[in-house]
Image 1 (cartoon, one colour):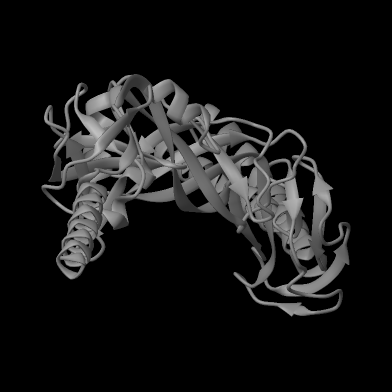
Image 2 (cartoon, rainbow, N blue to C red):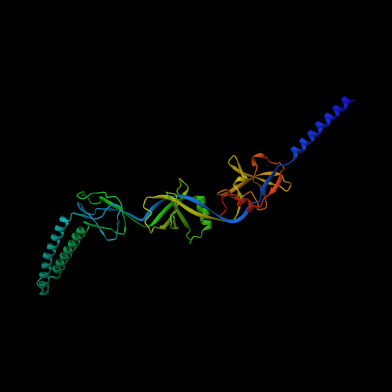
Length: 359
Protein backbone atom coordinates (compact mmCIF):
# COMPACT_ATOMS: atom_id res chain seq x y z
CA UNK A 1 0.00 0.00 0.00
CA UNK A 2 2.81 2.41 0.92
CA UNK A 3 4.61 1.47 -2.29
CA UNK A 4 1.49 2.38 -4.34
CA UNK A 5 1.21 5.75 -2.55
CA UNK A 6 4.84 6.54 -3.26
CA UNK A 7 4.43 5.66 -6.94
CA UNK A 8 1.26 7.76 -7.21
CA UNK A 9 2.99 10.66 -5.51
CA UNK A 10 5.95 10.41 -7.85
CA UNK A 11 3.66 10.34 -10.90
CA UNK A 12 1.77 13.36 -9.60
CA UNK A 13 5.01 15.25 -9.10
CA UNK A 14 6.19 14.42 -12.64
CA UNK A 15 2.83 15.44 -14.16
CA UNK A 16 2.87 18.70 -12.22
CA UNK A 17 6.40 19.47 -13.39
CA UNK A 18 5.49 18.69 -17.01
CA UNK A 19 2.42 20.93 -16.75
CA UNK A 20 4.49 23.76 -15.34
CA UNK A 21 7.10 23.27 -18.05
CA UNK A 22 4.37 23.28 -20.72
CA UNK A 23 2.91 26.48 -19.30
CA UNK A 24 6.41 28.00 -19.24
CA UNK A 25 7.02 27.07 -22.89
CA UNK A 26 3.69 28.49 -24.02
CA UNK A 27 4.27 31.89 -22.40
CA UNK A 28 4.97 34.24 -25.37
CA UNK A 29 7.95 36.58 -25.12
CA UNK A 30 7.20 40.23 -24.50
CA UNK A 31 8.93 42.31 -27.16
CA UNK A 32 9.01 45.98 -28.16
CA UNK A 33 6.80 46.98 -31.06
CA UNK A 34 6.19 50.37 -32.66
CA UNK A 35 4.46 51.94 -35.65
CA UNK A 36 6.04 53.80 -38.59
CA UNK A 37 6.40 57.55 -38.28
CA UNK A 38 4.92 59.79 -40.97
CA UNK A 39 6.69 63.12 -41.44
CA UNK A 40 8.39 65.40 -43.94
CA UNK A 41 12.08 64.65 -44.09
CA UNK A 42 15.06 64.76 -46.40
CA UNK A 43 18.30 62.98 -47.11
CA UNK A 44 21.70 64.21 -48.21
CA UNK A 45 23.11 62.52 -51.30
CA UNK A 46 26.80 62.69 -52.03
CA UNK A 47 28.42 62.80 -55.46
CA UNK A 48 32.11 62.76 -56.40
CA UNK A 49 32.96 66.11 -57.99
CA UNK A 50 35.67 67.78 -60.07
CA UNK A 51 36.40 71.46 -59.36
CA UNK A 52 37.28 73.81 -62.22
CA UNK A 53 38.01 77.52 -62.37
CA UNK A 54 35.36 79.50 -64.21
CA UNK A 55 38.13 80.47 -66.66
CA UNK A 56 41.23 78.35 -67.14
CA UNK A 57 43.38 79.03 -70.20
CA UNK A 58 46.86 78.40 -71.57
CA UNK A 59 49.05 81.40 -72.31
CA UNK A 60 51.20 80.74 -75.38
CA UNK A 61 53.78 82.65 -77.35
CA UNK A 62 52.23 84.51 -80.27
CA UNK A 63 55.52 85.13 -82.05
CA UNK A 64 58.83 83.35 -82.52
CA UNK A 65 61.77 84.72 -80.54
CA UNK A 66 63.77 84.60 -77.34
CA UNK A 67 61.91 85.02 -74.06
CA UNK A 68 63.43 88.30 -72.93
CA UNK A 69 61.55 89.10 -69.71
CA UNK A 70 59.26 87.40 -67.17
CA UNK A 71 57.40 89.91 -64.98
CA UNK A 72 55.41 87.46 -62.82
CA UNK A 73 55.99 84.41 -60.65
CA UNK A 74 54.33 81.04 -60.17
CA UNK A 75 51.21 81.10 -58.01
CA UNK A 76 50.91 84.88 -58.27
CA UNK A 77 47.58 86.65 -58.63
CA UNK A 78 47.82 88.86 -61.72
CA UNK A 79 45.44 91.65 -62.73
CA UNK A 80 43.78 91.98 -66.10
CA UNK A 81 46.11 93.82 -68.50
CA UNK A 82 49.20 93.29 -66.32
CA UNK A 83 52.40 92.51 -68.33
CA UNK A 84 53.49 88.91 -67.88
CA UNK A 85 56.05 88.04 -70.59
CA UNK A 86 58.07 89.78 -73.29
CA UNK A 87 59.47 88.10 -76.40
CA UNK A 88 62.60 89.83 -77.78
CA UNK A 89 61.06 92.53 -80.03
CA UNK A 90 64.07 93.62 -82.13
CA UNK A 91 63.06 91.92 -85.39
CA UNK A 92 59.47 93.13 -85.13
CA UNK A 93 60.56 96.69 -84.30
CA UNK A 94 62.69 96.73 -87.46
CA UNK A 95 59.80 95.38 -89.54
CA UNK A 96 57.57 98.14 -88.18
CA UNK A 97 60.14 100.82 -89.05
CA UNK A 98 60.50 99.38 -92.53
CA UNK A 99 56.73 99.35 -93.06
CA UNK A 100 56.41 102.93 -91.80
CA UNK A 101 59.20 104.09 -94.16
CA UNK A 102 57.55 102.39 -97.14
CA UNK A 103 54.27 104.02 -96.19
CA UNK A 104 55.87 107.47 -96.23
CA UNK A 105 57.19 106.79 -99.74
CA UNK A 106 53.79 105.65 -100.97
CA UNK A 107 52.18 108.61 -99.24
CA UNK A 108 54.39 111.02 -101.23
CA UNK A 109 53.59 109.19 -104.47
CA UNK A 110 49.89 109.44 -103.72
CA UNK A 111 50.10 113.16 -102.97
CA UNK A 112 51.92 113.77 -106.26
CA UNK A 113 49.42 111.72 -108.22
CA UNK A 114 46.51 113.54 -106.63
CA UNK A 115 48.04 116.93 -107.54
CA UNK A 116 48.43 115.78 -111.15
CA UNK A 117 44.92 114.38 -111.19
CA UNK A 118 43.53 117.76 -110.08
CA UNK A 119 45.21 119.30 -113.18
CA UNK A 120 43.86 116.49 -115.36
CA UNK A 121 47.38 115.36 -116.19
CA UNK A 122 46.73 111.79 -114.98
CA UNK A 123 43.55 109.80 -115.15
CA UNK A 124 41.27 109.08 -112.18
CA UNK A 125 42.25 105.42 -112.47
CA UNK A 126 45.90 106.25 -111.76
CA UNK A 127 44.82 108.22 -108.69
CA UNK A 128 42.72 105.28 -107.51
CA UNK A 129 45.69 102.94 -108.02
CA UNK A 130 47.94 105.25 -105.96
CA UNK A 131 45.31 105.35 -103.22
CA UNK A 132 45.12 101.55 -103.16
CA UNK A 133 48.91 101.35 -102.78
CA UNK A 134 48.71 103.78 -99.86
CA UNK A 135 45.97 101.74 -98.19
CA UNK A 136 48.07 98.60 -98.59
CA UNK A 137 51.10 100.32 -97.06
CA UNK A 138 49.03 101.52 -94.10
CA UNK A 139 47.77 97.96 -93.63
CA UNK A 140 51.36 96.68 -93.61
CA UNK A 141 52.15 99.16 -90.83
CA UNK A 142 49.21 97.95 -88.77
CA UNK A 143 50.26 94.34 -89.33
CA UNK A 144 53.83 95.06 -88.26
CA UNK A 145 52.52 96.92 -85.20
CA UNK A 146 50.34 93.93 -84.33
CA UNK A 147 53.30 91.55 -84.54
CA UNK A 148 55.29 93.87 -82.30
CA UNK A 149 52.41 94.05 -79.82
CA UNK A 150 52.34 90.25 -79.72
CA UNK A 151 55.79 90.29 -78.15
CA UNK A 152 54.19 91.81 -75.02
CA UNK A 153 51.99 89.16 -73.40
CA UNK A 154 49.52 90.56 -70.87
CA UNK A 155 46.98 88.93 -68.57
CA UNK A 156 43.63 88.63 -70.40
CA UNK A 157 41.79 88.54 -67.05
CA UNK A 158 42.51 88.61 -63.33
CA UNK A 159 43.57 85.20 -62.13
CA UNK A 160 46.14 82.91 -60.52
CA UNK A 161 49.18 81.89 -62.52
CA UNK A 162 50.41 78.29 -62.66
CA UNK A 163 53.92 76.90 -63.33
CA UNK A 164 56.28 78.62 -65.71
CA UNK A 165 56.68 76.39 -68.75
CA UNK A 166 59.68 78.35 -70.05
CA UNK A 167 62.51 80.35 -68.51
CA UNK A 168 64.13 83.64 -69.48
CA UNK A 169 66.32 83.20 -72.56
CA UNK A 170 64.35 80.27 -73.96
CA UNK A 171 63.78 80.27 -77.70
CA UNK A 172 60.05 80.26 -78.21
CA UNK A 173 58.23 79.12 -81.32
CA UNK A 174 54.83 80.48 -82.14
CA UNK A 175 52.30 78.57 -80.00
CA UNK A 176 54.77 77.38 -77.32
CA UNK A 177 53.27 77.19 -73.82
CA UNK A 178 54.33 79.84 -71.32
CA UNK A 179 51.98 79.15 -68.39
CA UNK A 180 48.32 78.70 -67.51
CA UNK A 181 46.02 81.23 -65.89
CA UNK A 182 42.94 80.49 -63.76
CA UNK A 183 40.16 82.85 -62.74
CA UNK A 184 39.03 81.23 -59.49
CA UNK A 185 36.75 84.03 -58.28
CA UNK A 186 33.99 81.53 -59.07
CA UNK A 187 34.30 77.78 -59.46
CA UNK A 188 32.44 75.33 -61.64
CA UNK A 189 31.94 71.99 -59.91
CA UNK A 190 31.00 69.03 -62.11
CA UNK A 191 29.40 65.83 -60.82
CA UNK A 192 27.63 62.83 -62.37
CA UNK A 193 24.09 61.82 -61.41
CA UNK A 194 22.56 58.37 -62.22
CA UNK A 195 19.54 58.33 -64.50
CA UNK A 196 17.01 57.34 -61.81
CA UNK A 197 18.19 60.12 -59.49
CA UNK A 198 18.11 62.60 -62.38
CA UNK A 199 14.45 61.72 -62.99
CA UNK A 200 13.69 62.17 -59.27
CA UNK A 201 15.45 65.52 -59.39
CA UNK A 202 13.39 66.69 -62.36
CA UNK A 203 10.16 65.46 -60.75
CA UNK A 204 10.80 67.44 -57.56
CA UNK A 205 12.60 70.46 -58.97
CA UNK A 206 10.95 72.95 -61.31
CA UNK A 207 12.82 73.46 -64.55
CA UNK A 208 13.16 77.19 -63.90
CA UNK A 209 14.51 76.73 -60.38
CA UNK A 210 18.08 76.15 -59.21
CA UNK A 211 18.70 73.85 -56.28
CA UNK A 212 21.23 74.81 -53.66
CA UNK A 213 24.05 72.37 -52.90
CA UNK A 214 27.10 72.21 -50.65
CA UNK A 215 30.66 71.11 -51.30
CA UNK A 216 32.63 68.79 -49.04
CA UNK A 217 36.32 69.35 -49.66
CA UNK A 218 39.10 66.76 -49.62
CA UNK A 219 39.78 67.41 -45.92
CA UNK A 220 36.14 66.44 -45.14
CA UNK A 221 35.28 70.06 -44.27
CA UNK A 222 32.23 71.66 -45.88
CA UNK A 223 33.07 74.72 -47.97
CA UNK A 224 31.74 77.93 -46.43
CA UNK A 225 29.88 79.03 -49.58
CA UNK A 226 26.67 77.48 -50.87
CA UNK A 227 26.51 76.55 -54.54
CA UNK A 228 23.76 76.53 -57.12
CA UNK A 229 23.06 73.93 -59.80
CA UNK A 230 23.06 75.95 -63.02
CA UNK A 231 23.22 73.49 -65.89
CA UNK A 232 22.61 69.85 -66.77
CA UNK A 233 24.38 68.27 -69.72
CA UNK A 234 22.30 67.45 -72.79
CA UNK A 235 23.08 63.72 -73.10
CA UNK A 236 23.50 60.69 -70.88
CA UNK A 237 26.73 58.73 -70.96
CA UNK A 238 25.63 55.37 -72.39
CA UNK A 239 28.56 53.59 -70.77
CA UNK A 240 27.87 54.73 -67.21
CA UNK A 241 24.18 55.69 -67.34
CA UNK A 242 25.02 59.06 -65.77
CA UNK A 243 24.39 62.65 -66.75
CA UNK A 244 26.66 65.53 -65.75
CA UNK A 245 25.49 68.42 -63.56
CA UNK A 246 27.35 71.68 -63.03
CA UNK A 247 27.12 73.80 -59.89
CA UNK A 248 28.72 77.22 -59.42
CA UNK A 249 30.30 78.39 -56.16
CA UNK A 250 31.55 81.84 -55.24
CA UNK A 251 35.16 81.66 -54.05
CA UNK A 252 35.84 85.02 -52.36
CA UNK A 253 38.79 83.80 -50.28
CA UNK A 254 40.34 81.91 -53.22
CA UNK A 255 40.38 78.71 -51.18
CA UNK A 256 39.36 76.52 -54.11
CA UNK A 257 41.79 75.98 -56.98
CA UNK A 258 41.42 74.53 -60.43
CA UNK A 259 41.79 70.74 -60.49
CA UNK A 260 40.72 70.04 -56.91
CA UNK A 261 38.31 67.23 -56.05
CA UNK A 262 35.50 67.01 -53.54
CA UNK A 263 31.96 65.79 -53.02
CA UNK A 264 28.74 67.58 -53.79
CA UNK A 265 26.17 67.33 -50.98
CA UNK A 266 22.63 67.58 -52.35
CA UNK A 267 19.64 67.76 -50.04
CA UNK A 268 16.78 65.64 -51.43
CA UNK A 269 13.35 66.26 -49.87
CA UNK A 270 10.96 63.40 -49.03
CA UNK A 271 7.61 64.98 -48.15
CA UNK A 272 5.22 62.89 -46.04
CA UNK A 273 7.73 60.06 -45.78
CA UNK A 274 7.16 56.82 -43.86
CA UNK A 275 10.05 56.12 -41.49
CA UNK A 276 11.05 52.99 -39.57
CA UNK A 277 14.18 52.18 -37.54
CA UNK A 278 16.82 50.25 -39.45
CA UNK A 279 17.03 47.79 -36.55
CA UNK A 280 13.44 46.70 -37.34
CA UNK A 281 14.57 45.18 -40.66
CA UNK A 282 16.44 42.09 -41.76
CA UNK A 283 17.62 40.84 -45.14
CA UNK A 284 17.03 37.57 -46.95
CA UNK A 285 18.69 37.14 -50.35
CA UNK A 286 19.22 40.89 -50.79
CA UNK A 287 15.59 41.65 -50.00
CA UNK A 288 14.49 43.64 -46.96
CA UNK A 289 11.83 42.34 -44.55
CA UNK A 290 10.15 43.35 -41.29
CA UNK A 291 7.96 41.48 -38.83
CA UNK A 292 4.49 43.01 -38.73
CA UNK A 293 2.40 42.15 -35.63
CA UNK A 294 -1.23 41.24 -36.37
CA UNK A 295 -4.23 42.05 -34.17
CA UNK A 296 -3.85 38.58 -32.69
CA UNK A 297 -0.20 39.44 -31.89
CA UNK A 298 1.15 36.99 -34.45
CA UNK A 299 4.25 37.82 -36.46
CA UNK A 300 3.99 38.17 -40.22
CA UNK A 301 7.19 38.38 -42.26
CA UNK A 302 6.64 41.13 -44.82
CA UNK A 303 8.71 42.31 -47.77
CA UNK A 304 9.28 46.09 -47.95
CA UNK A 305 10.94 48.43 -50.44
CA UNK A 306 13.36 51.06 -49.20
CA UNK A 307 13.26 54.47 -50.90
CA UNK A 308 16.22 55.99 -49.09
CA UNK A 309 18.42 55.64 -46.03
CA UNK A 310 19.17 57.96 -43.14
CA UNK A 311 21.38 57.29 -40.14
CA UNK A 312 19.52 54.59 -38.14
CA UNK A 313 16.36 55.05 -40.25
CA UNK A 314 14.85 53.81 -43.49
CA UNK A 315 12.37 55.69 -45.66
CA UNK A 316 9.85 53.06 -46.79
CA UNK A 317 8.62 53.20 -50.37
CA UNK A 318 6.15 50.31 -50.18
CA UNK A 319 5.12 47.34 -48.04
CA UNK A 320 3.99 49.15 -44.88
CA UNK A 321 1.11 51.33 -43.77
CA UNK A 322 1.15 54.01 -41.12
CA UNK A 323 -0.90 51.93 -38.65
CA UNK A 324 1.11 48.70 -39.03
CA UNK A 325 2.78 47.47 -35.84
CA UNK A 326 6.42 46.55 -36.44
CA UNK A 327 8.70 44.45 -34.26
CA UNK A 328 11.87 46.33 -33.27
CA UNK A 329 13.67 43.90 -30.95
CA UNK A 330 14.46 40.20 -30.78
CA UNK A 331 14.21 39.66 -34.53
CA UNK A 332 16.70 36.80 -34.40
CA UNK A 333 14.84 35.00 -31.62
CA UNK A 334 11.45 34.80 -33.33
CA UNK A 335 10.02 33.27 -36.46
CA UNK A 336 7.20 33.86 -38.89
CA UNK A 337 3.77 33.02 -37.41
CA UNK A 338 4.94 33.11 -33.79
CA UNK A 339 2.75 34.75 -31.16
CA UNK A 340 4.34 37.38 -28.93
CA UNK A 341 3.33 39.65 -26.08
CA UNK A 342 3.40 43.25 -27.29
CA UNK A 343 5.24 46.06 -25.53
CA UNK A 344 3.96 48.90 -27.73
CA UNK A 345 6.14 52.01 -27.85
CA UNK A 346 5.26 55.25 -29.59
CA UNK A 347 7.45 56.06 -32.60
CA UNK A 348 8.44 59.36 -30.96
CA UNK A 349 9.78 57.47 -27.94
CA UNK A 350 11.62 54.94 -30.10
CA UNK A 351 13.24 57.56 -32.35
CA UNK A 352 14.26 59.73 -29.40
CA UNK A 353 16.45 56.86 -28.21
CA UNK A 354 18.19 56.44 -31.56
CA UNK A 355 21.59 58.06 -31.98
CA UNK A 356 20.27 60.47 -34.61
CA UNK A 357 16.88 61.94 -35.29
CA UNK A 358 15.16 61.95 -38.63
CA UNK A 359 15.92 65.50 -39.75
